[in-house]
Length: 313
Image (cartoon, rainbow, N blue to C red; front, side, top):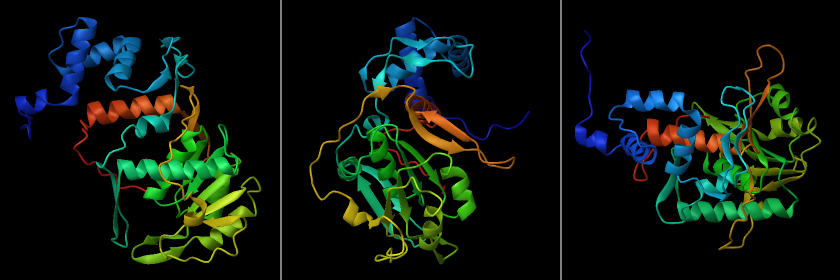
């Protein structure tokens, strides 16, 4: 028999989110689970009850409650989830407005930047105001050709706060790779960094953006974030504006969170494109929200005092 490498203490188990959730289910559904296996089996045998419990346990903010968890749990794909609910993905992520650190960013240039929840809310509010002023509304597509950096997250939250759908490509994609994806969804606004770092090299994105725009007539505004240099020359990019000039200068703004159905399109993601054009995969706002809360709360045991690290483009 293989030797056990590690086992959490009883104290750690009882302090975990999974244990709290198990206790919550025991109390609300009159169960007596003492181990994970029983809780897991209940979750797959009682799908509507499990997801209803997850909704309440995660304290999902919704302006209108759901009428039904799922219309037919055996219909996959095609089931209708949480019908009747009205909510906003970004509102749930921006529920805090305090001085707790929301994100820490360190790029390959080793510069470290932090944003508190208060600063994050303010940045998103100002960006959302600017997007509304240029006519972005629910159903529009806003895209990013960006590294995984604070401005990328702020742009996504600002766009989705008003019901626009977010999509993105890694900045190391070639022109064809970007067009194969964004060309299918007709985006209205493009956020891009002027370049990115790779193995210590400063790689420019401006020329590729100019060529991409020739084939994407739907884009009405290009917002350029300085990353590898502070004053990039964007004179050759049609409809381009520096991020600092685009974002509203107003302070203490409140975000108007558009209240939308659970299945409102949140993200457009893409298959690899190995058998033709990449296939667009639409992820719903409510689906992304509740599933990521489940993953982070239960399986990652993430708490407010923790820091989680993602190494990704």
